[in-house]
Image (cartoon, rainbow, N blue to C red; front, side, top):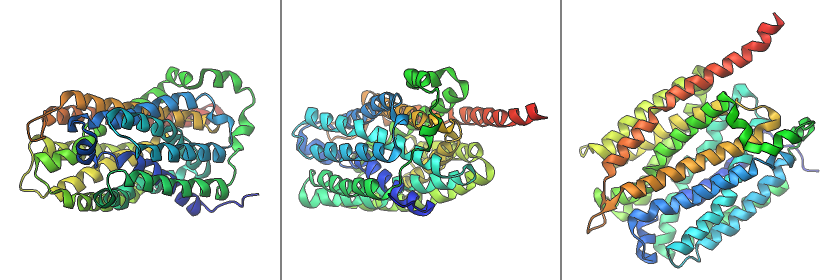
Length: 410
């Protein structure tokens, strides 16, 4: 029998899973110019590489919604992680754009369920009054991937070639997958509530789209992911080619931005618990829009690129952490993994759509600089400012649902 873990150790292990999962995705985008040079693909096609991963993760999320709640969450997570390891390693064997796309599709197929099951475990294990902090701690993996993973990946690519980061992440993922299987306790409490659940499972994710609170939660997620990933895949190329930022300092740029964001994930989670997720996420949306304007539309050349990029990371955190904390309150225990899987599908599909739309809107000049980035940025701002409408609607519906049993009892 696997001994139970403390909440802190559980969060650390799930955070490690998310670190590998997120790093596997985000490391590709800063390597864009290196991949374009070595695989003979245009820089503007990098959105397709990111989009292929997220599209596959979206499809696997929809498929996973039909069966993930039928299994011990520990076993489901271990299978997803081992699949992710093999798919990531295959990325290092790519020899052109189609082969790289195939490898990223395989990685996304396992990465989507890994995210869904991880968030379901956190929601199962952590009481609602501490869930904002817990989500902030686990989502700190995104910042940590930027602080440590992306600079390390860029340096490994510089030293040993663009393939080495893929092999390094796969090796780290294998270690984490083994720890999940050997250290994580079984998570089967949701199986006890499965009486009469077969009919619900038969329709999987489709049942959620008939419930307004769920639809509003998914709409919030879609706006957040699409607005972010219209820009994220193009940041490395934009700062290097358009703004003239040196390649050898790119790792330091991600290190600085990620370090700041890692700190603010904890702050955002604590503020969401204290003041409510919707107000904090709304502040994040407004600041995000201001930073996007100053970075991509009317670039504040007097402001250091380090400060602009760090602000972008911080504002993204203040949108995402409260949003995840709020969405975790939507489903009940029996449908939690199915909901998280569906939400993961929405996340990845929206990110894929954002990346692919930006790839369609962008072109490049003779020196490789991106053209049309201002239009992409305006589109991103418009989506970001839709988020507060959905956030407050979800929060209001959850309050009504919580008050209904008390009113009936009275």
